[in-house]
Image 1 (cartoon, rainbow, N blue to C red):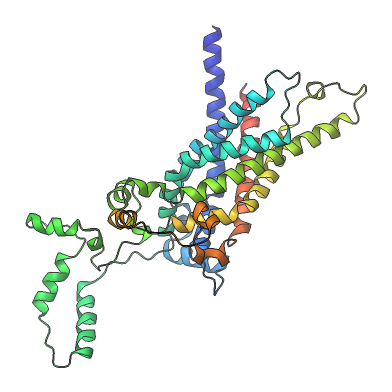
Image 2 (cartoon, rainbow, N blue to C red):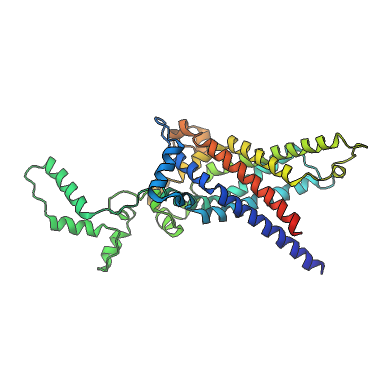
Length: 376
């Protein structure tokens, strides 16, 4: 009976946590999409504002385009946040072992948050990549190239530099059809040519980020390491986020307990005698902590978002490895995955991320506490 009750309690807490995380993901996903588009379209010479991005998404796909990649976002948030809080609870359990009251110091919360953030980044990195590739689709025009227009443009440019040149339109059409991404029921060597990564778009260039959305396409072109793109900047971002989040939350929690203990008579001898805080107060503290942590780690979030939009075929990665290609930038930029070209745009979209992260933290913690309170 005790074993059955234990499993029932675990399932109840798991369902409450998953439900609150999914609800938070559905609320903040449009804000996350706008934030990602601002980061990707940022340029040091001009500012891309929120209205421009929103108008482009609305004109191409409507407001429903803001929910592109929601499935990957919800799945990644459930696994990542579960790993973050699970790792934090395991580490703080060692800190609280042997103490009379269930209390964690702010410095201990900071160290536990750093470790839990690293674990969260490793778990959630592939899902964030898939989510971002789908989010880019809502602001990208997916029109198909017309072989006739390509032929006319190519012939006109050729005649400009080679007067008297007569293009063989039949040969040109055959070449364009051969390099097209449309499936052909032809001989096997045609399909072999199409497997070349530079021929996937039929234009001799590597595909754009929004053209590679599915995990199979990413792995086939960029290799298995492609799904871990942006891991360095992601670990730096989540370590800072986890450390600031948990130490700020612990500080606010301690401050609220001290404020509550002022009016108690007799004064409490331990934290346990003060009693628990209300779910609303804990949720507000979590929301404030999430906003501050997002501000502190936003530059690494921009670096990760922009690095995940770069498509590098596995053959190019292999060549760079053999040639010992050195990544440009300072020592800190190399270790954290920041590109030197992004130095002036690292804080683009900081307001949207602060708002979305604060709202998500409030909904996750508040929804979880309320669900557990009313279900149990």
